[in-house]
Amino acid sequence: MLGVGGVGCPAALYLAAAGVGHMLLVDRDVVEESNLNRQILFDASDIGHAKAEIGSERLRSFNPVIEVEAVSRNVQETDLEEMLKGCCFVLDGFDRNASRLMVNRACLRLGLPAVHGFAQDFSGEIFTVMPDKSACLACALDESFPEPDVFPIIGVTAGIVGLAMAAAAIKHLTGIGDLLAGQRLIYDLAFPEVMKVPVQKNSRCPDCSSSR
Image (cartoon, rainbow, N blue to C red; front, top):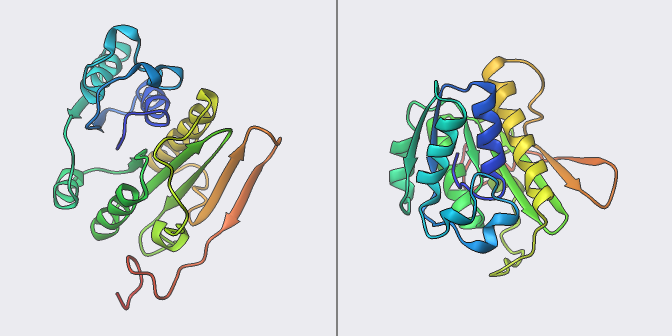
């Protein structure tokens, strides 16, 4: 679980509840008061403490038979690739495009399936990548779209995205269900439906094309 934030907290909690035996939580940040409306692994007593460390403690107390490791530092691309070796599935809850694309590249090189989660305002989406089989995140992501420094988010939006990410991980680990890899699954609390937008592999993609 990369990023123990609004989408990472519910995803990790439900994976622990499902009995996923070994998890790695990665987050460089500490808990802030503004996090508490959506980051459900934390409470007011955790403010100022490392998210990954607190999150791993909460998950172990919730399900004491699982193993949870914590990494509380800024991770570079070379570190990330080494860190992810031996993993089965990656959940990307990072909140910046540069970090998400770093995860995408590392997972492609390792042949690791990953689900990327985004949430803002009342909307969010997930995008699952199966290396060599589906479009990757770089095929789908429009880097020219402006990223605000601060953006509003309602807690339940992050919760829905986090649960969808956990469901993708469980489906992959059990081999049950369709991951809908290469499709943008867009959730909007203002409308009673989920939109599915297929993304084709980009033959000139800098990350996944054979000509890269």
